[in-house]
Length: 527
Image (cartoon, rainbow, N blue to C red; front, side):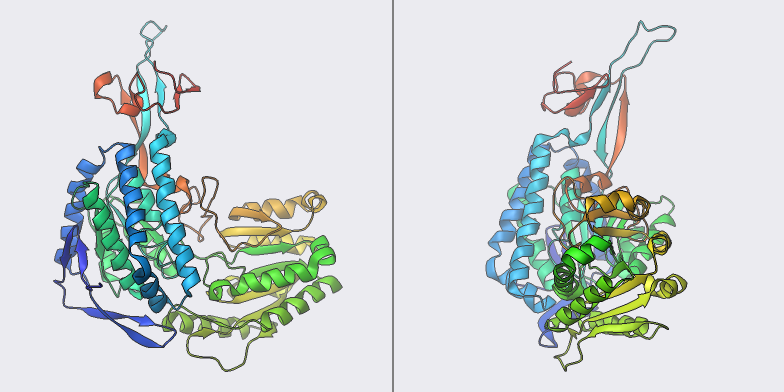
């Protein structure tokens, strides 16, 4: 049952005087649930509990934390149909999407649990002392990754489960040894509360310290601002807009003690289409990309918003097929009236730009909050001149650029901002022939794809979900996959430390049995 309260550690609390409802975009009416926004006292209490919990939780073994993560996955599953029903009501997304995202969320938690049980992620390295070294003795130095402290996670609008309350940011922070305070997304606060209750149950079952997790409701920006500036908070995870992410980044850097904000933000995910892709599989690629543009009403951060090709009759054929195919697809409900309104505004603004033509448009009357898709085309010269055309449109929208030649294509890629993904369609010979284009694209993205679509993000150690600004605030890190744990840790060296007082990962006998770098060699042997 949804209470509408905040979780301040294990305690449900409704001390604030501001209330709000979530919204059912498919029915176009508010939901039945009313939520109490956290006030300053509740924010401070959550932060204080998290700070105290950190002193305990940071000392727990990897196996103990893994037990906690697995218990969270089990409790999420135990929520059963209620979670799926609330998810679909608050998001307008179909049941199949809800079930799939729940599975991904549980899978992420279990992946981090497995990482903890193996243990080598701490990157332990040991350089033993050499007291007889000449001309100077060498001290004993040992280094590993250690958690930084309480983390604030902002739930995302487009993934109510996988990027929200118990999503990748939360799972990776828990795995690192950091408590988490979630600023629940107002569009799916009910979904968030249910998942929060699962985390609280799991924490109780596995005897985690009170304050290892809190969940705060908020309909505006004030709660988030207070959390980011609170001295107990040591890091922030965010998935959302460039405007929101950069605002938090600035706020965090204006603190007396600046903290990192790992924000995954906007991206148009450029697609480079080489000639062979058009002549050999043009119609097939056009049909695949029509589906990719429409997937989830275009509300994925990896939506293909920009397609680049060299002008030719085969490119014209690709454009015609894409336009015809996407025009037959039924519009899908967007997450919220505000998101739909923003989509329509951005779509119309770009469509009104000079020298832009419409390839496909869905003009049939639809129900409220349904995203009517649109594909535009423009030549390379005008795209280069007009940087407004570079911006992301969050929805089923894409621009196809007719480049005059390979040099213009390269120039366009060089002018683009940082992106999450970039895709190349073609053959292996073209990778060599157009190497400077491929290299330019690689410099702009976190993940470069060959002959595929960017929508769909595999959760695994090799995934990089991030990219140069403004795709993310730090391109060295990922928000998807087990590598996400590195955002919440820092390296600490122990010099000449007594063996029995070292962390187990650095002790001579290697009681954890992990792989370490000892004198420059990888080994799991004891010293």
